[in-house]
Length: 440
Image (cartoon, rainbow, N blue to C red; front, side):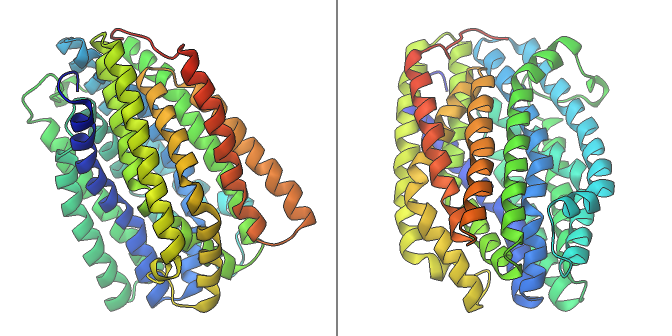
């Protein structure tokens, strides 16, 4: 990342990430497709309502590991091989610990969380069952994310893709087998995901114990270095808090959607699954930007960082708007993969056509936030997104829905808050205070 064509580096790094993220999305989407078409809209609503809760848990942990990736990237860019080794082992050891904690906490706290969300009684049992089984795979989920973070911080975005190909095939085959042929119901869909998550985690971890480089993992050295962990948490904790707070905001949004019944839940759930797919290219460019910025700041390449930030942001925003136009035009066709019921399709299509043309703003916010994270400046993205994507969004929905009780009002909360965060991030970028050179 510190030499050669910036555009080529970013694109070639992002391409394997794209296919990997595409396969990652298939985990949840396959569940929705199989459940929605085999078990019906009530079961689809049960799967959909767990999405924001899953992000609440996983988002916080993954945010913490952003600090690990930034530290590894900066040390690698600065040529500090011993520092890379210490940071890699600290990150993986911490992932194992947090994976266990998340599994236990998520399993036992599931019913309470779903009740807080106001989950309708007709989907409550299915939601509880799906969520509890899903979180039995918490360790696999977190460990895989941490291993991928190590690979990507070192500039390797291909190996995680290979493992995901295998695990996604397993997830798809088991989903169909468990739900359609064995009749395991919604629990079978969750079990298939858990098995697939552990397969990808094991493959990634084993490879890290075999690689030839400073990031190689030695099981006997899997301890957390206090100083390194402190630095990783100082960078990662704000991102984890940000993800959690945004997820809490999404839980509130989901609670408002739940109030409109299972049809609205299924329709919005279908759209959110689609959005997760169509926004993948932008997500991957953001991940590439974080690695690019961290490595080049570690190598003191400030001019290269600034140039790469502009190039990556232009690519991300352009892709987002192109995808948004496609979603706007073909929303009914794209959403049909999740459900063929007319009322569900109508809700999903309305949400898609309300938000899709504003994807450029969402992309701009994500790209700039990723640049700041790569520079180790994670507090600013946390504050901005907490204020706009959580507080402002919740305030808007709470007030407007009270006076205009239609689900369409909720959809406009997203373009509004994307606009606010984009404006603030652009102002902060031109102030230039986010650049901090050298390894940590």
